[in-house]
Image: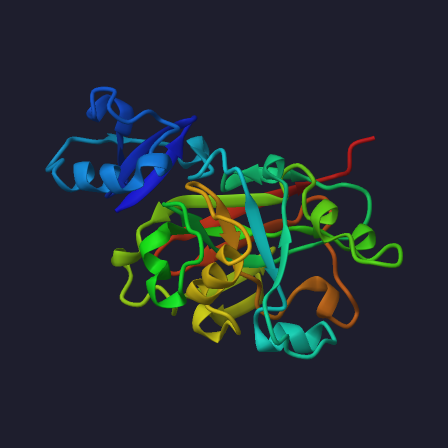
Length: 279
């Protein structure tokens, strides 16, 4: 099953057409409330049968989970990215937060702030039930679906001062595009092993498989949920593979006119046009 956000209304998507969830359910499920009732929603969707959908313009797509209460990120979660960053492989997940106001849809312009903005394609899990002290073996039961994301990072702010400023440096407006769809785990042959890649102006920057993660999505859910509850609709950015701008020689950062395309197998792509910093 695929879920899309079309102009602020959640829809089921199949073969390029969309069915408005609130209309099809006769108001049973509101456009913004399906994640709080995800189990009930899945059962209803399974009985929906054949419904004629409507073609849509990808420009209408917004973030599949439009109002997460919590957004978690994970640093250094691929071996090669740890190496290019100059760090040893972590013994436990390095967790930070992105503020929800940075979340955007998949086909958006990115207004660059002043500084050095880097790209980080990531697989993102959307939580579908309250997760508290969840063992990794059960964690997929708490995932509504997977989507693609970019964890844009302003490196100057991130590394200024005596300690890193991860959360602020990764939370400028538009620094968390997600989409184009939420895809339920059962749609994948193996949700732990997906091709992930990022191009900059059609040049391949990042390419890996999510099976190369140091800590899998189930392991991350186990680790975080032992500390704080994960809530329906929350986003978990699971880390980026090697190939970021900061890890290159010479270093490379985004500039006005650049186009960043992020793709994940079975989910689709994000496309972001970079705009000059506002004055």
